[in-house]
Amino acid sequence: EVQLVESGGGLVQPGGSLRLSCAASGFTFRSNTMSWVRQAPGKGLEWVSTIYSGVGPTVYTDSVKGRFTISRDNAKATLYLQMNSLKPEDTAVYYCAKGTWSNMDYRGKGTLVTVSS
Image (tube, rainbow, N blue to C red; front, side, top):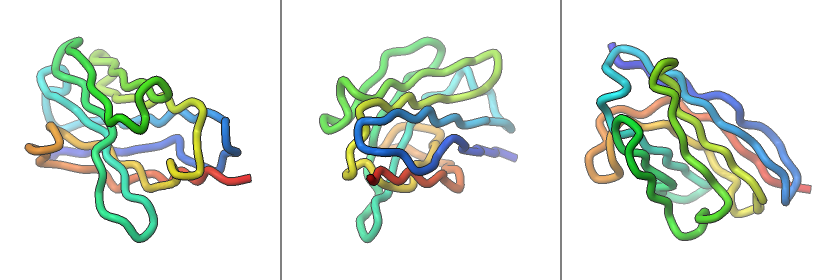
């Protein structure tokens, strides 16, 4: 059974940082492309970033480029999202997903990030 469990969310002030983690199990993590997606209050799901299988390349949505960094530890089957210079508009539930934005087959339950003073 595929499981994706996010952690690391919370309340942070504008300009602050958080690191999200996603513990994966039930599939061969290193062989799979992984993504982070988010859903802001009252809005639809939005793609944030993708890291390709192995130690593959990374891609980001324009609004987080230069502020967020996606990474993976294949030995620990864990996906990360380092978020710096956070803005109120980054407030959302962040989900770890197996696959790309257009080919996502599993998603975790999410972790809430609130950016507010």
